[in-house]
Amino acid sequence: MRPRHAVRYWTHQRQAAANLPETVTAPRRGTANFAGTRRHSVPASKRLTPGSDDNGYARVRRPYTRAAGSRITGRLFFVNSGGQGDSCSASVVRSAAQTLVVTAAHCVYSVPAGAAAGRWHQRFAFVPAYDGRADTVKKREPYGRWGGRRAWKPDGYTGLTGGDWNSVYDIALIEVGRREHTLQKTVGAFTPMRSQGGRHTVVTRGYPGVPGRRPYDGRDQLWCLGRTRQATGMVLGATLPAALPAGLPAGLPAGLPAGLSTGRAGTTALRPGRLETHNCHLHKGHSGGPWLIQGTRDLVGVLSAGKEDGYAAGNAVANALNAEGYGAIVRRADPSGVYDALSVTLKGPAKPVRRGATATVTATVRLRGLMAAARVPVTLTLPPGTSLTTTGGGCVREPARSACTIPALHPRRPVRVTATIAVARDAGASLRVVAHAASSALDPSQADNTSALRLTTRP
Image (tube, rainbow, N blue to C red):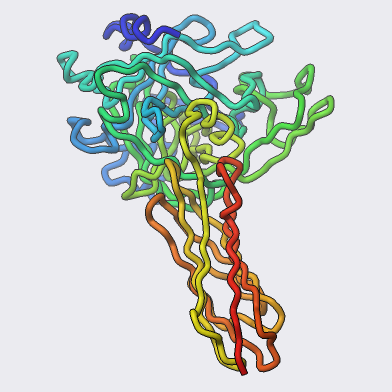
């Protein structure tokens, strides 16, 4: 790809004419309300966004340069696999190269009509803080256009008609070209947060809309506040079927439907790895938009799918930044970056502990690099002759073991887990206590994920 060619290609006229991808909605079930132009997809009782409309959206305050969240979020223009101008939402994500933009995989790759295989989209141009209603280029593109150099998607994302809408692989990274400064240095970046989904209060931003169609036309940055729950996604086995099963609904977006087995060696399975909210309803063009933990810059998900516009029980689904999706591409996109470098150190009393008394031990968990992590498991294991009497919050205590969960872990912000251990009167002279913190395959070295401590005892 040639970044400068993409920058020159996406003139204001082409931006205004860009369509939105049609491959992001779930199979149709029930009856949609398409009468008129008003879409009542989120009941009033479920809308959390102040001043929101029927889909849960509200307009972001202008100018978008005012706040970090709206500045880091932008509109992504591209030419799709069918040769048409399209757009999605995207955001800048922390990286060592400081040039990465994260979006949905269906925004970078798709199968054109009548084709048997997918093709990469072309001429990517990311416009942070895009304002389609501004009357000058400087106000419309306050930080300019950033042309795409390369794009990555997980190998599991196929773009085949059928079910990639329900796939944990619907996430992608785009490297943009450099200027005097990098994109990240120019507008900032969100911190990727490793997780498998779950419950969060999130803020999502993006550019929903289809040109010339109400209620949105892609010219405004909108936001929505939502509470998420755990959602499952499709994980592929080794292969895909040679042909899709008969009877699938027409117009299903890319991939295999959830729960289907493949016809050859591989299989599909549902695993955690996605987030769902019924407080916000996906609208075309918002695909690829960031989901941030409220009040932070922690990027916990990327908008992937939802029900067709106008359904009474609307929803939105995001892919978490998990090992299967984000983890599969970030090493290729940012080879010099350090991600999920987790370590634990265990400390206890400096002097021998009297048998029959108690001792306090503390496990300090640290994270290095560019990524945060949600719900980090930490385990304390005790030897015979001891038992746990108390542990810190978020722990499930057993006689000789404590399984704890750290809600959120950030680089340079260590978290401590403390436990009180009862030493039996007949305990040995030396007792080995072990702490272990679980990381992902992104961790460059897992040797420091376990720490052991020798407690010496006295009569």
